[in-house]
Image 1 (cartoon, rainbow, N blue to C red):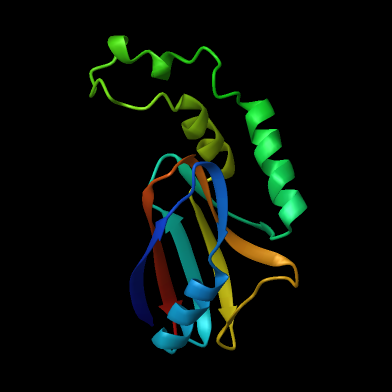
Image 2: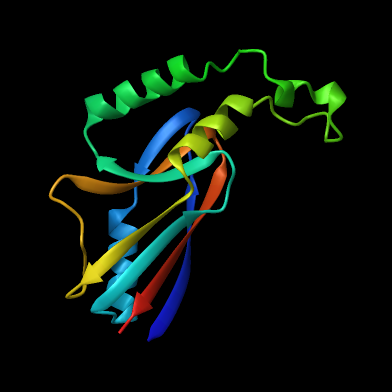
Length: 145
């Protein structure tokens, strides 16, 4: 078995934004030469998530609206009380972003079959930015034979 690691770097947009990263993952699979195995895609941040869903513009807008209703940005979160925490006074008030990231998850493992991701017709791998704009990194690990 071979293992290849790659760090994908992205600059994200303001607030909640969603980026499809299938192309970057497919490129790493091709470069690795792996024909059967799996790809693990993981975020390196506590206010982003990795998920799989349909990349359809209206659905992406629906998701952003849903996240904002489910976990409102300006609710009374203890994490946002910077004076009670031992942290940089410029720390962002982003508890809502941490909570949504925990609900979505930080990684996905996807089978590679005959050199291709085993995804359905409408499935896309997505990095969900919940606290942008920021520079972000995603680890892509390709394992197999």
